[in-house]
Length: 239
Image 1 (cartoon, rainbow, N blue to C red):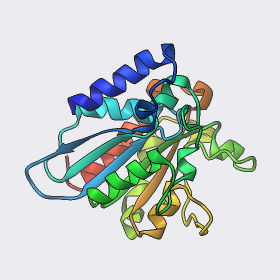
Image 2 (tube, rainbow, N blue to C red; image 1 turned 30 degrees about the vertical axis):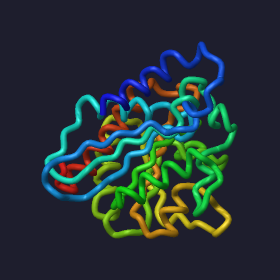
Image 3 (spheres, rainbow, N blue to C red; image 1 turned 90 degrees about the vertical axis):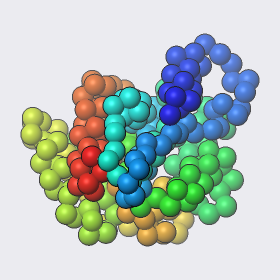
Image 4 (spheres, one colour; image 1 turned 120 degrees about the vertical axis):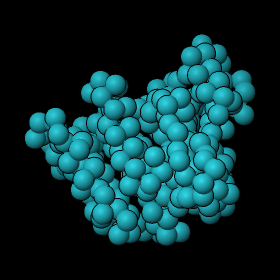
């Protein structure tokens, strides 16, 4: 846990002032686990695979300090900390879009490491935190999916996602409210983590706050991500 905190803070604070001389730093995701003595579900929380979508990584950093679980295990994975430091969507060393590299026998080092973590820990649920450039309810004709939750088809999500949406929307005006995107389909050519989870029948939810270019304050987006995490963990009896 402390190594995760140290590495993530160092990368976020120092790396903007350094050259990319060490590929091993930028190609490795930062991760830690929070466990309990009682057996239970294993959930993976993945933040900021796209580095210009930083709220996920900062949410995970807060959880490292504040989250305790009473059963099961939570894996916190900051997918692209150098990308966060450089405010770039891509991994700034490989220049790959990590979220287009999730497939069996992936050639992308970072994506492969994330998949290894998921399989080694036999993950039951994945929550993947991203950020859109606008609001889905305003811009859905133009491609923005900001402020949406996109769950996989498992009935598990149908039990809880509408309630999460109600909680998130309590203090939001209509045109900036969260929406649900059900029944997201994946074809064999799509190599996102969402489609990888679909292929392997792992319950998955894509979270998209509205946050690129700081169109909402970072503290608001972290609060939204945290609300989602705590609602899911509470439903699973983990907190």
